Length: 111
Image (cartoon, rainbow, N blue to C red; front, side, top):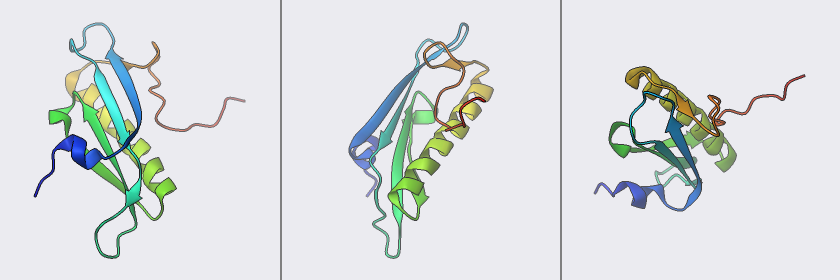
């Protein structure tokens, strides 16, 4: 049985709202991250559900890792890749706090 997106997402532990820079679609994009949970599949490790509302039907997808931290980190990478693809496909620029760095990838601080 296929569960509705919000049901599969489980407990939302983080949400971020993004806006399109001038010329983008009228509505923004909302990213939701579910709490990492053990993979219910036999022999599975951990998974972290992610939903990007405003992108390709608001699908809910999972990132998998050997523990909760890895599943969460891989979910952040997956979000970054998905949002870059969305911007390329739509031809616009997403902003968070008026910046093009959407803040999903952890980068070392500047020197």
